Amino acid sequence: MTDQAVLFEVRDSIARITLNRPEQSNAFDLDAAREFCTVIERTAQSSARVVLLTGNGPRFCAGGDVASMVAVEDQAGYLRVLAETLEAGLRSMSELPIPVVAAVQGAVAGAGLAVILNADVVVAAKPTKFLTAYAGIGLTPDCGVSYLLPRAIGQQRALELALTGRVIGADEALAWGLVSSVVEPDALDAAAEELAARIATGAIAALGDAKRLIRSSWELSRPASAAAEVDSISHAVTREEAVTLIAAFAKRG
Image (cartoon, rainbow, N blue to C red; front, side, top):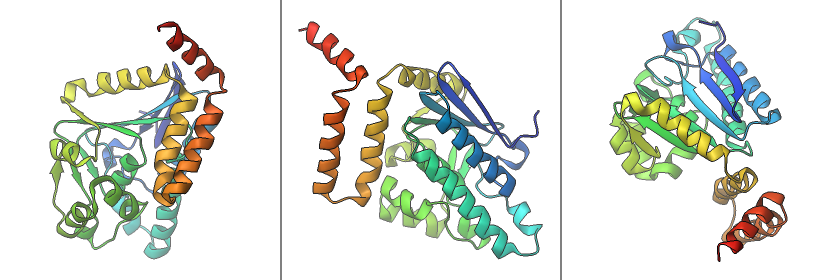
């Protein structure tokens, strides 16, 4: 097993990013957060058409590495830098001009929620558990959780999870809109691979623009969002991928 905290390779047009601290439930210490940022930069510079994000071991991601916080003298300073670094990396992932598919299993906790909230499509194994976890150790949300979670599942549900520490299962996460689909554990890898491969064959420039339009709509007025859509579609129709696809569609009658 490599000692890299985050693995990266591009194969078959898919950037495969793997959280690789299974003994720590793929929790992020500062080194891991910095590695993640570097991997996202490499992804942006690659020829990949889609990202497939996974976690090694029985749990997808337990958030921040509490042991690394305890081990330092200046815990406040360390946690500030860790939270800033990881949030920047996750935000960069959400801003990639290609779709991000996440496959999750076991547990998604704390900043692990931020990881999936910054992905675009999330496939969960049926036994997966989701929880905010912060209040259980006297901490508060970070890495964009307080911003993204209510937008994904609604304010009152987000408040319930944050204030009660309630754990929800994959089926409830699906019903709430936190994940996109739920599969049996032994089908997770194949389902995520198939989805990423299918997306990789699509009109990636158009998919990237659709992702950007949807994610940016929270910060825009409706007229501004509509104007962004008009600019995007009028540019998209001139791209080679659209010209080819439109011509093929027209031939079908």
